[in-house]
Image 1 (cartoon, rainbow, N blue to C red):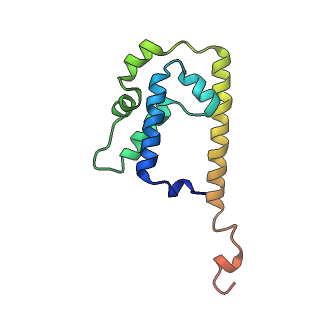
Image 2: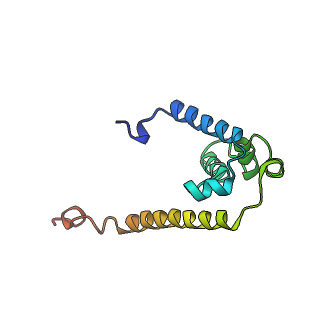
Image 3: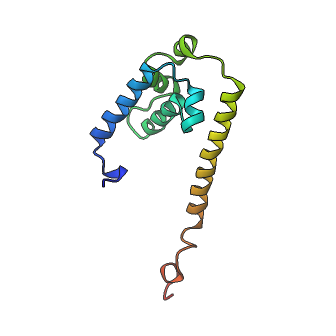
Length: 127
């Protein structure tokens, strides 16, 4: 089975573009619902694109990245498609975002524990 890193960049880019087109077509899928179910939304995708572009010779700002994801300016998309969130939607989103923080905190804790958690034979000369 191929790991994520083994997927050819062209294949990954094609899949990403298909996801973006799908989200553009499904404007009825509200960002707050995406956040509540999966812990990410269109704005997250735009942020990830912006962050990844910072490492290139053509960095995108937040508005450019959102336009790339939404297919139009965020303000236009929001006016045309975004509905007011219900209290239930907001509660689901908060619960989901807490799971994201827990995973992030665990990753940070594991990163901070290395190499201390390695056996002494790996971290101490002659150990």
